[in-house]
Length: 205
Image 1 (spheres, rainbow, N blue to C red):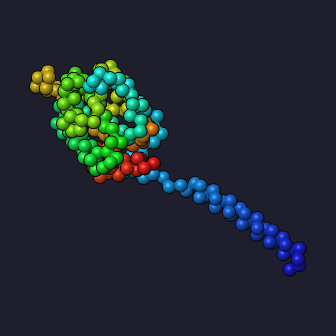
Image 2 (cartoon, helix red, strand yellow; image 1 turned 180 degrees about the vertical axis):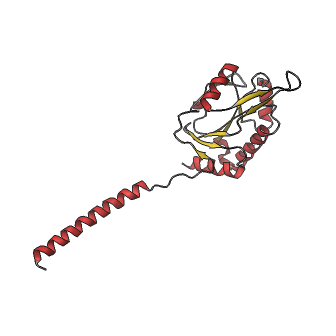
Image 3 (tube, one colour; image 1 turned 135 degrees about the vertical axis):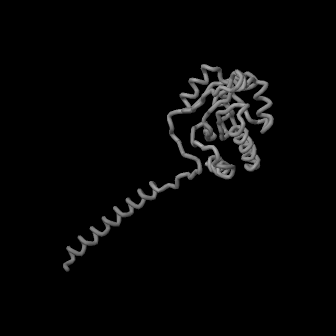
């Protein structure tokens, strides 16, 4: 092999090394570790972004009020026999298991039964689980619009008397990060350890 051909091969080899190095850098940049959650990751969803509702003290609340905290928002009603008290009990346990980070969790309970869930009723109901939990009370019209925006189902089921009805409703929770961005859809029954793990991941990001 003459000297000229040898130099050409070396130059070609150097070119391939450069391309490989460039590709390597590109692959490294594209392989950043994505956060892993137990709940359904809905980051970037174009719904359930915000609300404007009165709490049990009559103060209008929006997501901006809770910036700096992870927010778990649940739709339910005070006379719910099982799903709602179970979820609220679990969220109280989640807050406890977060330890010092428990203060960075805000649970919001949106009633789907504003006719019976008065401010007094919901204050007592939240207090039974954790005084820091906030109940939000939409008007009937606000609830219709909110349910549509949050893709939430609710329906009145007649009872034996006009006031003994029950409410069928969606049982999952929406989870927002500390910047107020919708991140997770947590199905009912996932359990306390799963929620604690997901919230720790959000708080660490």
